[in-house]
Image 1: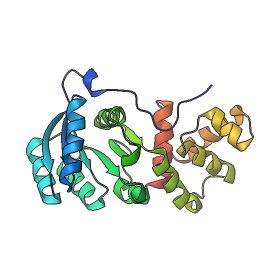
Image 2: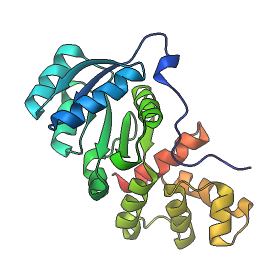
Image 3: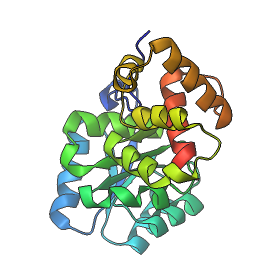
Length: 221
């Protein structure tokens, strides 16, 4: 059986009965306005735009949005979680900021997204906001691969082969893709993935989401 990659984008904001409420934080006027325009075009309700940290926290508390779109800033992410614990956070980062994901995630495995700006289109942005609002995790495979490489030596519970499989999962490879990369059977890959889930304490449920949780739990704790 071929499973989907770690990262999936499968819903659109326009499919919802009521538009999701979004706050956009970006200190660049052009980037802030451009992001807000894309979100509005996709059917979201951009209830506020913020130009600095304090302004963002004030507007989140006042408007109580479903999702905040923001740059990679661990302090801002922490303050937003304190202000509104159920708020979904979607981080849009530059390629040189992929390594900051662990600090921003800070162990959070639900309602969080971390995407690279230069790999982001209107459809992907809309799908990511929708999934984050629903409590899912949405991560760019390149970001996850960076985090896994940084933490590879810390995953003592996993065997060498299981860590290889986790690396491939982080890169978004299917079971077949992992098998071809590691020159093993798909059945062997399935056994390794089951062992990874068990060792990292991943609950049963949707397989694709479990793969995301496995990677997050391994690198963001």
